[in-house]
Each structure stands twice: as structure tokens, then as C-alpha cells.
Length: 128
Image (cartoon, rainbow, N blue to C red):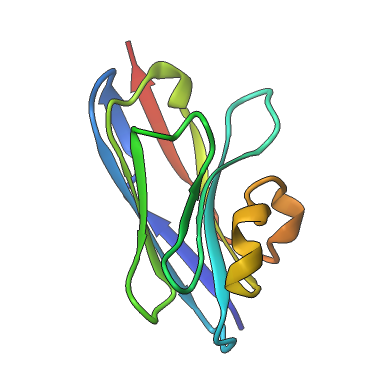
């Protein structure tokens, strides 16, 4: 059985930083695309960043220059370092995973339907 567990959310002031963590267990595939998505109240879930098994990151425009996605080599453990946070970053953040070749992982950012496995989410709140 697959489980994804996120941690690290919280409340910060604008300009602050948070680091989210995600640990996935039960996935046996050798190639796993992992990603972070977020959903704000009243809005659709959107991709933030993905990272392939070989460590190649892909970012949404909203995350470029402020967020860094990383992954423990050869493990399904992933992080999202978020700096210069803005009130519009306030959302529930979800960890996601899918068995996929590295060459496709960047394209998975565009649609949450690409991901099969999801965590419960961790809340990030940024106050002005």
C-alpha cells in the first residue's frame, strides 16, 4: 500500500520561509515522478514543481526564483524550500507521486490528473 506523508507547513509572515517535506512509501517502481501541488480556497489545484528520479526539477512560473524542489537520491523523499513567501502562496500543499519515466516528469506539472498517489496535504498560510 502506498502512503505519502507531508510535513512542514505552518504560518509565516510575508517574506518568510518554510520547508515542506514528503516521504512516500510502498512505491516499488524504479522511476517515480514526484511533485508539489497546491489549492487555495475557491481555486483549482495547481502544480508548483515536479522532480524526476534523476533529480531534474520543473517549476511553475509562480515558483521560479523563490522555491526549490529537491529529492534524496534514489529515494522517494522530497522537499520544497519556499523563500520570499507571499500572501498569495497561502494554500493547502499536496505531495504527489506517479510511476513515470524521467523524460515525462516535467510535463506532469501541467495536470494533477497525471499523479496517482497523493498525500493528505499540509497548510501554508502567509500573512501580510
